[in-house]
Image (cartoon, helix red, strand yellow):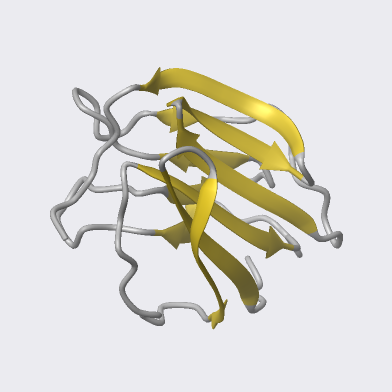
Length: 145
């Protein structure tokens, strides 16, 4: 059984280079809508997570969506029975593209996860260390605001 602990997340939008446009922190709770975020072609999502266990089947960590089926901006899950993350963000031609870092998150220890979609790629960092990169994001999914 997975035990959900409150997470902190920081949503950052990047426009015109790496200039920081928005920064907000809000506690997350299981199955609780936390509000709307204006999407941009380039963005960064960061959160701290401390896995307490594993569970059978996919375990959703967070999922930003346009409200339509098959929309991930991004979506993050645990692989079944592990602390390994499955990270997805849509792009032109593939709504389910992403990165799957090989490294598992340590149990009972906090890890800062950062997902950046910018400069034509998706980069995933654990504690500021690059753990996965996809160069398929020249045309990421951008919803109409």
